[in-house]
Amino acid sequence: MTTLTRLLDVVSLLKDDPRVQVVFTHNEREPAILSSGVSEFLASLDAKVISWDQAVKTSFDLAIAASENDELHRLKAPVLLLPHGIGHQKRYPHQIVISGLNPARLVRDGHVVPSRIGLSHSNQLHYLQQNCPQAEPHAVVVGDPCHDRMLASLHRTARYRRLLDVRGRKHVVLASTWGPDSLLGSDPGLPARLLTQLPVDEYKLSLIVHPGVWAAHSPWQIRAWLSRARRAGLAVIPPQRGWQATIVSADCLISDGGSIPLYAAAAKIPVVIGSREPATVVPGSPLAELLVKAARLDPERDLSEQLDQVIASESLTDVTEQAVEFPGKCAELLRPLLYELMGLAEPAARAAFRPTPDPVPEVMEPTTFSVEVRQHGDCLTVRRFPGERAGQVAPPDRHLVAHEELSTLDELEGAAVVYCEFTGENSDFAAWAREIARRRPDAGLIAGVGVDRCLLWNTEGQIIELTTQGEPLPAISACYWRGKHGFPMTGSFRVRCGPGTRTVVASAFTG
Image 1 (tube, rainbow, N blue to C red):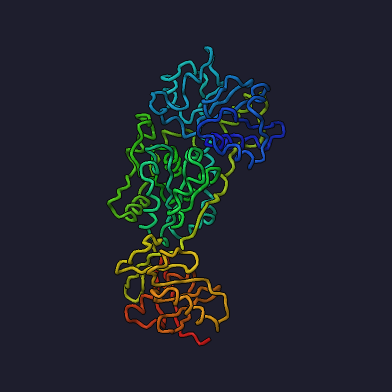
Image 2 (image 1 turned 180 degrees about the vertical axis):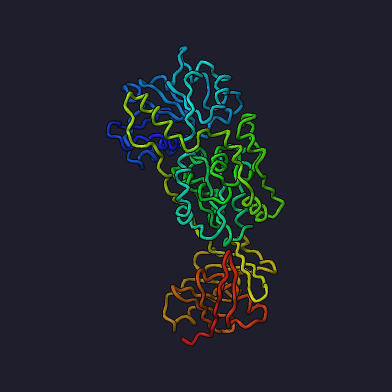
């Protein structure tokens, strides 16, 4: 899947040329360990796909590969080999061979297989000299197509944030590569822990998982492992598309020793490392330097304070300058190479990458909240955390808010506020609320949330109409807090939640 997404970046430079027919192939008979999902992804593209047997029997004008771990020597075509990450930053596990530069694959029967080997930076030439000196004359520095597509997408940041429902919050993106040293491999509970410690109205969390993890374990298993975090509001980015747009829209990235932290830093996104450094990182490489210079996530310190410090820090562009050469120029360097290998005249139009595809996140909105209300002068500050205290007594400074239909029974047990969408006639609200209160005797407030109004029912049978702008649940929690602390539940008061402050009016409902 990773190599396929890289190939899509490259062939986007050929889309407008009617002289060029693009076909895809992969070896279904001898699939790679991490190949699960490739057939389905290709089918979703509506692309022309041929069998590997047909591919090796047919002559082509050009073959493009993003991994040397294929039988490229069997293809009857000049081969352009590109890395599927940001340059060559890692070794194969338990080997000294640098990933992407395996001499056993680059050279066959004394001949170098690729006609051209694309590098992201000229400083990678010495890796090629050390690993496979025969192939050095075939190398050409073209920059990085994925990095440049991200640069071509920066003007869409606001759009990507809307699609990810960031709103006015800080967008924290978690990115995990594969293996035991990855972010999820070393701390699988991190997403859920972050969500329960970061106010939902101040932070939006998204997760990118390496396609190889989805392939090795299956989408069903990944979603199952992340079920707790997903119920708390984690947006999961599917492996096929959207991860670049998600990075572009981030305020900061929490990651590991994969390629994504380098891509993020190159896009001037602050990076914090949340895992140990893998043994596969090439010493002295830009990735190794990034892992040294980037901030480290400290589980013992306040998480929001750490993230805010990282967001306010300067990006590590000095490191990424050693990972990607000629930023913004990759299309201008790569397209002439493609046409040279095909023996075609290059089109007259300027070579440029299109913006990266929109993100299509898998997300579930949280329905249960642990809520903290504090009074600051004439304003009540409400901070809501996804409710992961199911079946437990809320701490003295918090109360639980649960959805009557969408929360679990454990979450509803002990909830101080129970809410649900109310679409009935006004005259039915009291009976509707009393029935819920009968089922939820621990609830001190029953809330019916409608399209344009919110009605509350307290244990004294009083019905209150709440008028507020935006999300009503913070105002409902503020109203509950007022009643619990001896203030009248009716009246006008100010509520701060997340980045904004609003006025709430609570009045006796007259029907």
